Image (tube, rainbow, N blue to C red):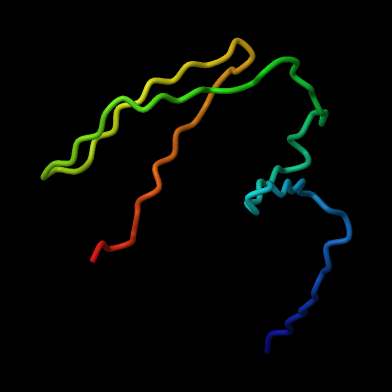
Length: 89
């Protein structure tokens, strides 16, 4: 005969840092791996100005050409392409 013991433990000490972004996405960090948290303010205009250059649609897909000019305060940027799921009638 076997004797089983079943216990439920509630988490009483949080071990995750969760950041909720304005776009409602969550980023979680393991607290034991976080060294410090701080808020910074960058002076000047932080931007990546995008200029449309050209667009081609072909059998293998669409191609979009853009030029990006970062301000000196901008250290990086991300370009996201969102497909248009609407069908033209």
